[in-house]
Image (cartoon, rainbow, N blue to C red; front, side, top):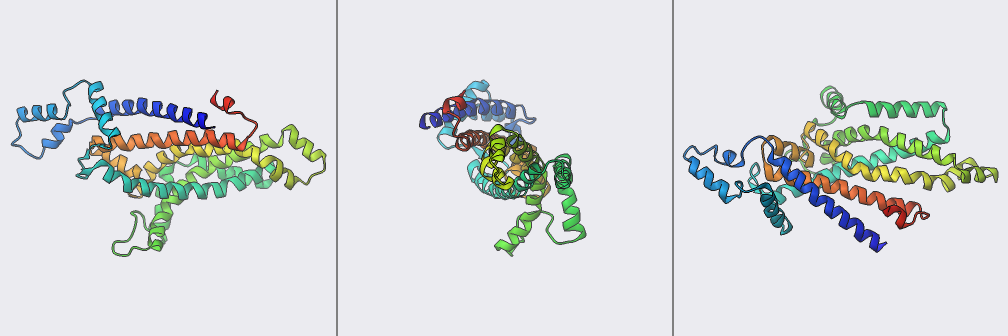
Length: 321
């Protein structure tokens, strides 16, 4: 297990280096010159001064040399300076990561709590009225675009009913957990409704496939009650593909959070990336996008370990292959 863990970590590290170069190159293609943006507010700066600044920051060097310099600084903990926030990138990034973790964690927990019981119960009674209702809800959740759903929630709960705030993270001067939960309600609900449909479909399909296997037929032939067959013999096997999908969903949730946080003006990673790209804040956009890559790699790693833990029949060699 330790060998497998080390091997997967090394693979993830290699992928991260490749992805970091790809993101670094793509960020370099963003419109706008960093030096021009720095000196735009000072008309006294001459073209010779601009050339000196480009040489100072290494912008006149080949991209591989610039990337190697950036990587060496990043390994040492220096991720650069955010032009928009006038602060080191890490100082800007850490609070946003915490806010997004709260949003994603609450949304994922709520989605799992709703989707898995509904999907498994629908699979236990396929083609029943309950199954049809669950499928309609799932397809509705999958079909509705997340941005449209977010705007609809704002219109209903903030504008028409006035029950919840339309955006932000808290009332100025109020504070307190209850106030923060009110501001968190609509973003969490939006992300949950956007993901619960696909989770229901995966849970239902996994349970139906498991209930058709030979060992389930054997358990039924022994006269076991259907509820015991599902809980004791089918649930663990059905959780294998579901756990994989949930772990891989880290990256999907992060992408969904980008749209949701922007619409609800929630100060998380999604809004930070949007503001950094729109404001040509190269350093901040680069590190924020790399963090999204790390989240996705971590989800993949988690999926592999969950696969082995849920199905002891699988050898580590099979998973590595």
